[in-house]
Length: 307
Image 1 (cartoon, helix red, strand yellow):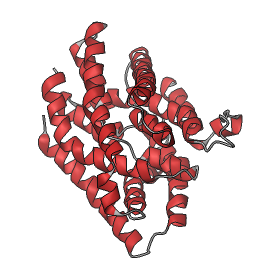
Image 2 (cartoon, rainbow, N blue to C red; image 1 turned 90 degrees about the vertical axis):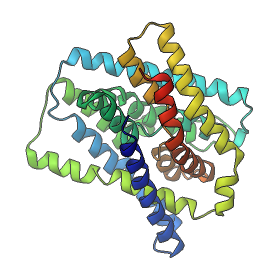
Image 3 (cartoon, rainbow, N blue to C red; image 1 turned 45 degrees about the vertical axis):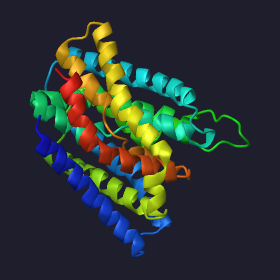
Image 4 (cartoon, helix red, strand yellow; image 1 turned 120 degrees about the horizontal axis):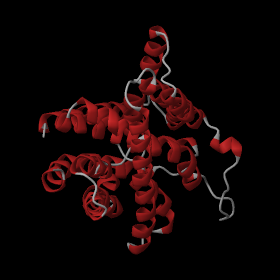
């Protein structure tokens, strides 16, 4: 395993997070700007990156579809497990939906795929990207429903307007174009890539600015962030390994599944929470703590479960 790659990746994430924290403390960023930037990430930069990633990709489409379906199976299993675990642990009601979303939507794009590439070669990066398509579909359906504020305690039902967001439309379009072997002119792909590349730095800046709104002691002293981190970073990859062994999945695809389930919380959950005007304190703290702890847990998970 390339420990240097992992540490460099985490260092870059935290360096940009610190930049966002300092900009908030010096009032370059405020809560209104933070929410506006989060809408831009969810609606513009992240859909652009997704579309760019699928244009002109080679490879057998039948195998690609199997990987997408496999990824969907993983994410649905994590979703079901997250609901059972949150109730078993008696996660407070005011944090339960955030806890469950953070279990499902993790940082597979910026940490997981490059780490798989360092372990198994370039093909693993592409295959992890295909497996991750379920993330984008669930993010724009289940994630929106879970984090949408309730009206008088009533459960919110999705409308066509809620589902047909730029992110969801781009996800479907990217899948269709990929299956059709479609490509785009180089200048169009360069433009999509340039816009999409803003997603990760903007997300970490927004996270840093969100953390600046709360006392630092609260951010590192919230016991539920550590409960979440232990479940997500240690229990979930162990369960994934056991399930893969139980169904007889090959060692390579088992390893990709374990890596998918062992990632720290993803900042896109925070982007959605800010867009929907949800309280982001627990989400921000969980992303911060789990990303920090992943420098320790990921090497351990790889040594124990990745063959």
